[in-house]
Amino acid sequence: MENQVRKLFARYERFSNRALGGKIDLDELASLYASEFIGAAPAGVRTGRNDDQFRRVMAQGYDHYRAIGTKEMRIRDIRLSAMDELHCVAHVSWTATYARTDRPDVAIDFEVHYLVQLLEGEAKVFGWVSGDEQALLKQHGIT
Image 1: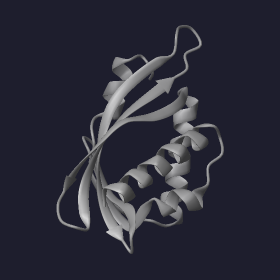
Image 2: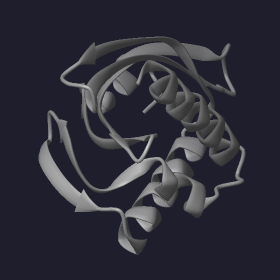
Image 3: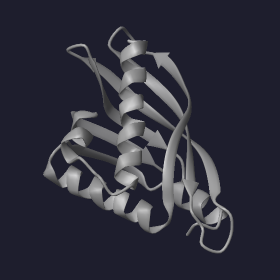
Image 4: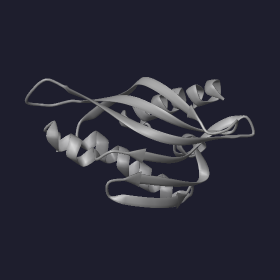
């Protein structure tokens, strides 16, 4: 399972950086996620489907990230906590780099905990838990 999960997040990282560059492939985005998922953050818990609405919301999210100067997302580390032979939590440590016009670029480290399932030999995200992104961006003067 570890190899499939690492491949999934290598694809996720490549996808994110292409999307931040304005080249978003919504079919590729959809291929990273299970047909249904759950997300939790300080704003609450949400469920969703991997459908056209999800693709639109994610595309809008990348538009927003570009607008606030996000220029790169890099994975620093991935640590897995297995639940069984088909499920794990992938603790992914990211660094996001933001371009600033009036000062040097800002790099922000954060972690997201992804729920991952192995489906027919391929790892898919079926959920995530993240911290307070807005507070972190504000703390670093991004928003």
